[in-house]
Picture 1 (cartoon, rainbow, N blue to C red):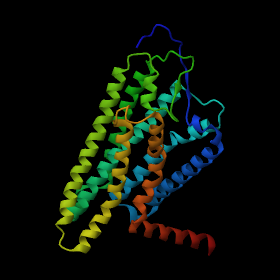
Picture 2 (cartoon, one colour):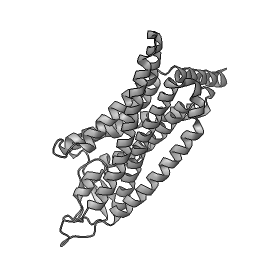
Picture 3 (cartoon, rainbow, N blue to C red):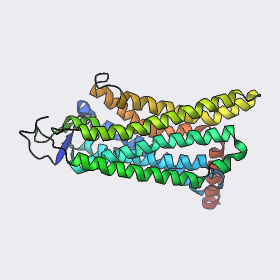
Picture 4 (cartoon, rainbow, N blue to C red):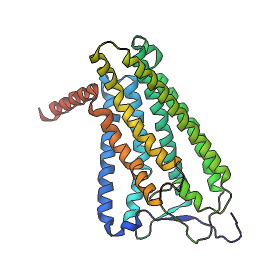
Length: 316
């Protein structure tokens, strides 16, 4: 794009849900309620897995890491969005936009790698239960998570440097037609050559998404074959129930991700993408903990035990 006439830009307007301007209070209360529930249920998982001796297996360690990521993921967007809903003119600084973009992007990519790690955990648990503790443990999971975080930190630094070098022009204050700093709307506002930063972002996110998706599919193909080979119907049902919640979460998240970020821009309108992004940013962190824990007998037993301990401590 041409760079002949531009003014240095230090902030962006966030258009958000401008078409629903008359419902600001209702939107604020609705999103605030969702965010409070997200915080409570994910904090519950984090605390319970940390303090309960029943929940010390790698599966629950991974689940705790997912809850941390989903909490950070939602927190990187929702508090600012709540402020913007009530603001007369919602703005965000260029630096703030880059920081927000990198935090939710990094947390999102980390969640997808945790999906892959969870699928490997379920594969080992079903296919080789006798060697489960030898093949995967909390220390291995912790090392992998730290390694993932370090790699994503380096990628975020590189993308941040490239984004900071872009020029934004044609308007005194460019407007992002979204309720948070998303990558595609931000690129549309730049009058610089964005090929390099788009290439780096596409390469890094593409590698993570495709590798994690391949690993999940590969693991579940073997899991399904292992389950079908179990002679008793009760055994098959029990084995499948341990994996079904994870499979549901994976299908929902990859489906939304493909619709929002992989589909061509001509397929979905900006308003449709806002709706899908709302599901991706708010609904998935809301429902994922419920799906994971609703039918999880060990988690529910641990929760009931801790509830009884608290009741005895404070009321007896």
